[in-house]
Image (cartoon, rainbow, N blue to C red; front, side, top):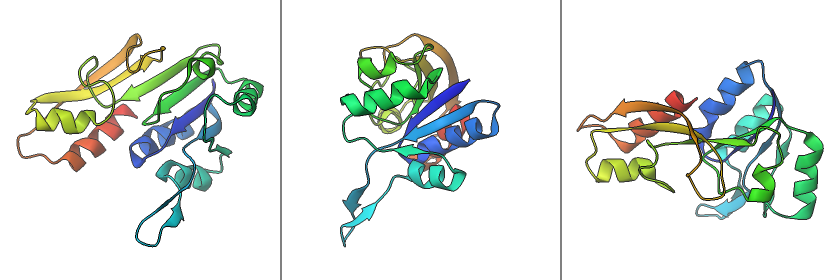
Length: 172
């Protein structure tokens, strides 16, 4: 399949690498625009942009996902599907472009912990289990038809960073 990958933080890197090694064709990578950060307020790009550059992919960094020129560019790509991992909410006009729609990888066992910081919520609430969910994107955040879930047991001594890395790899 021809796909466009949407992602921003390092959580998305294992998924991008897995797709890179697959028989699927990645047409482009979409990530957030570079931002000023740190003490010197230097321009920083996302982790996924760094990896996409290394892998040789075309990169798009739209400020707004629903602007006419970006929508036109996405339509011209003629992707079969969009794959979304750790990215912002896609507008309906965008996720309806590919003939197979868009799928999202979320770091929780949906419907639990919809929205941001699901790993933190699971640990703060003392959950003994979390996981990842892949689902079809629909209009409302994290509410689409579930395609696949994989459970992950949480040790009482585990750190957020370890769960984050483990779920990124399981999701890939």
